[in-house]
Length: 383
Image (cartoon, rainbow, N blue to C red; front, side, top):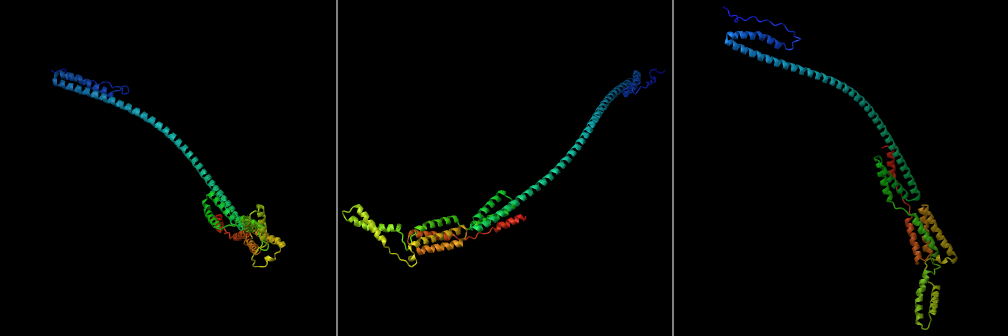
């Protein structure tokens, strides 16, 4: 007799479930599959204890599988949610990146436009700067050319003045002013001209100048002293006569003092009488006869003739005619030595004065500033 529990009833197939409505198909299928198995296990466990253990093990394995499946399902759901979130974030970031890219493109276009505008302005500024530099160079060249023209004209005028006056002073002053002007400009292009000016200035300074004003004053002094110079034929009774009178008065005064009883007035009168007596006669040696033939009334014309000679020499000095001045000075010296008493101090002083004037009144060779003129011409030509 067959045990009714030995043959298990066939498991009824559960009705199919809607996959759209069921959110956990795997768990439901596992439960459905395990439902007949549990009933079968119970029936098998009733007849066989080993079957019960096997059924318990199977139930535990089924439960563990169910739990693992549920955990896996949860993890899949969480992964799906994370993927969805990350996909949404990626989309948002992609949208933002596209927006930023469009903004960067717009900014790049604006930067390119601004750069093009700046390049155009830089090119315009460079062009204006070049034009400005050319204008400055042209102005500098014009200024340098004007300076060179002024220097050339000033040097030539000073050279003419030096030739007319016979003095190097006008040329020295002009070259000094030219050197100072070039030093203020401080242009490398004009440095050669400045060196040439310095060389000519040193050569011109080395020439000793004639001080015509001082020589004219000395001649005026000689002219004023002519009226007081003693002649050989008409000796002066000035200082020399007074000195001889004093010398002659000495013995007379001694004799008068020796005589007792004379008054001081008598002694003074005797001294004057003795001096007058000694002054009436004078012995002088004259080598020529011409001074003796000068009459007293002709002495005036002799002195006036000497004055005219000295005045002519003075006018010749003022007009820079040194040869004529030298001739007049020689004639004046000869007249002094021939008709005037050279033993007198005034005559000796006048002769020495005329010798000094004759020694200094000479024509000077003023050096030409050819180096300066050549340097100016070279700088004007642009060499």
